[in-house]
Structure formats: structure tokens, C-alpha cells
Amino acid sequence: MSPRKTTRSSSTVNTPHLPDPRRQGRRTGRLLALSLIHIPAFYDPPAQLPAADGSLVRTEPLPLGLSLPGLDGRQLPGTATRLMYKSTDAGGGPVAVTGAYIEPAAAWKGDGPRPLVALASGTMGQGDQCAPSLSLQHPLTIGEGTVSIGYDNIAVYRFLAAGAAVVVTDYAGLGATDRLHTYVNRVDEGHALLDAARAARSVEGASVDSASRVGLYGYSQGGGVSAAAAELQSTYAPDVNLAGTYAGAPPADLTEVMKGIDGSALAGALGWSINGFAQSDPSLKAIVDANTNDVGKAALKDTSTMCVGDAIFGYGFANSKKWTANGKSLADVIAAEPKLQASLAQQRLGNLKPTAPVRLATGVQDDIVPHKQARQLAVDWCRKGGKVTYEAVHLPNLGDKIMTNHLAPLLTDQSAAISWLTDRLSGRSTSSNCWSMPLQP
Image (tube, rainbow, N blue to C red; front, side):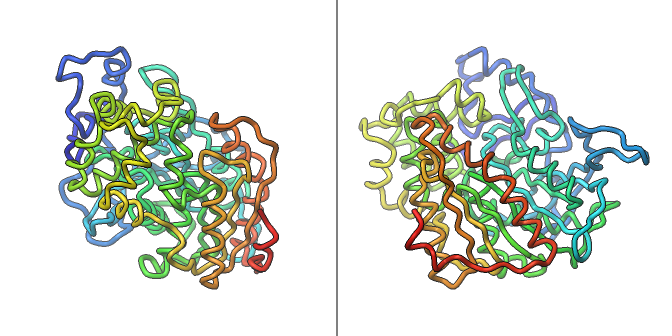
């Protein structure tokens, strides 16, 4: 479990951070098909990066998978640019991050200059072919050994229709081929989102600048990212004119979230989490190796190249007890390993106060990213004096562990979330409902 992927040619998918099973004689149809997936050479980082966070490394036009020619000759809903920019990872080192900026065709009708939405995508997977910027180009990918759906594209297009520019980050190692995606690492991902907002200002033809109000938007993994960025903004990116943050179903306490994921349709995300921890801290390698059996080690290799659809088909409803050397769940293994406990504790959200208004929404039936730990984040922020709008989304129980309770609030709350954030981008004030927390589930 080496800490990096090996850089590879533009015609192949990333080589996993664990030894490639194709080189060990383990040939499956999925892995052979993955070797045919085309990752553009754009995503290979250079040896040297700029010094300043948010500096552009390179850009190129990005054809949107869903677009129409406008009457004035401009593409609808906007003109997209593929980005690579410099960020700083959790270890303090430079990292190349890819993403996309979309200049909207629609005029901004709100107060002030055109604003920018920095959008953090929900879980896409760990293979480079799952990068959100690629999903903007190919909203639905079925075949070539992978299944990927750009479900956050709906929110992107709704903000563009309102006249806000949008920048989307791929996160560290998702798309960029020099390392593995550090899934749910709050610092890596929070920095990547804030630096995407910085990078957007330098895109040729962009109408946003340092005076533009910035909104952070994310659900699920993306909700954790937007929450992390809101906490980190005052110290890491005070030059980002943050107006507000939407954090939907944020994974704030990974110990509880891993319990929710275990045995669910999204059980493959356990592999992404463990792989990501070992990428960020290679000293965890020995602990992971000692606590996983052959089945678990194979699952970690396999999931490192998967998108969400692949993981559901390949590892849906997997029980982590079958991955561990002692037959205990991953939660029990972590509880017995102080270093693993410490690693997860470092990812805990709620220890810092966001400096701009936040709207936090969580479905009361959510059992994948458990409701109680998301609600606790709102409580923690309120206790620190944050301006928090807490929304408990009430829906019937739509089925345990099958993701419906997690995905339904994404759809039912999206209009309210976009409206709330658009108001912040227009300069409208908002109040906190922290006073109501004792009365809300």
C-alpha cells in the first residue's frame, strides 16, 4: 500500500496504490476493461508546481455533455474550462488539483458583481475516471468497466441558470494522476475547494474576481467538504470573499459514518476511506496490513479504481467483518487501534467556527451518513457562536441501508438550499435558528 499511484500514460486508468493485480496474474473482466479507460494527458501533473495556492497550472476548453447553442452564439448554460491548479495538502506539501470553471451565459440579476459558487461534489469514487470534471463532459458513463453518474451536475446547471459562475473541484488525487484520492480528508478537500475559488479568478474570460461573493455548496461527501472549507477559510483563504455555505448531510464524525456505511449499498466507500487514510499517512500501512485478511486486501486494491456505480455492483452490502484478520468490524478494529482512532479524530468537523452563515441540512432517516452526527455538527457550530440555519429534513423511512434515505433529501432539499445560498450571494442577510436546536430532531 504505497502512498502514491504511479503516473501513467493518458490511455490507461490510474495504477492502484496497492500492487496492481493485473501484474500478479489476477485478471478480471472489470480490471481488464479499466485498462481501456481514457484519462486525458491534461490530468498528469508536472514535476514543478507554482508557489501560490490557487495558481493555475494549465487550462483547456471543456465541452459540456449537456449544452445548447444560444441565440447570441454563446453556449447554454455556459462556457466551461478544464483546470489544473495548485493547492496544499494535509501534510503541508504542494498538490496539483483538477476541476472545471463554467462562465454562465445568463446574466447575474442579484446585487453586486457576478458571484461564484465553489461546488464540492458528492461521492464519485476513487478511480481517476470518476473525476467530477470528467462527469461534466460525460454525465453518464456506462461501459469500459465503470459506471459513473454526474448527479451534482443538476445543481451546477441551476446555479448557472441563476447567473452565478461555478467552479467544481476534483479534489486531490481524483483525476490528477500522481496520487490516490484522499477520500473524506477534511484538510485536503477543504483546501482544494477554497483554492478552486481562487483559481477561478484567473481563468481567461472569467467575470469573477476577488470582489465577487463566494458560496460553498456540497452534499454528502461534498457537504463535509463545504463544511471543512467554511471552517478553514478564515485562516487558509481569507482572500476568498465567503458569503455563505450549504452543507448537506455532512460526514462530520467518520467513526459514526463508517458504522453507517458498513453493510450498506455504499460499503465500497470503506475501501476508499482506508485507502485515503493510508495515502495521507503512510505510517498507517503496517496497521492496515496487519488488520486485513486477503479478502480485505483485495477489496482495497479493487475499490481504489472504482466509481460509485462499480462499488455498488461489486461491494454493495459487504460486511467489513469479512475483510478483517480477526473477524471484527472495522469500527471495532479502529476502536482497538489508538493510531487509527487518532487519524479519524483529526477529521472531525465542528472544532472550528465557520466565519460566514451556514445552512446545514440532514435527513432525519439518513442511515448512511447518520443524522445524529450531522445534527451534532450544527450543535457544535452553534455553541461556538456560528450563524447556523439548521434544517431537519422529514421524510418517511424509504428503506434501510439502500441509500434512499440518504439520497432523497438531496433532491427534496435542493431548491431550498440553492435559494438560500443565492440569497447570500445577493448580499441578503440571514439569521440563525440555533435557538431552536433543542426543539428540532
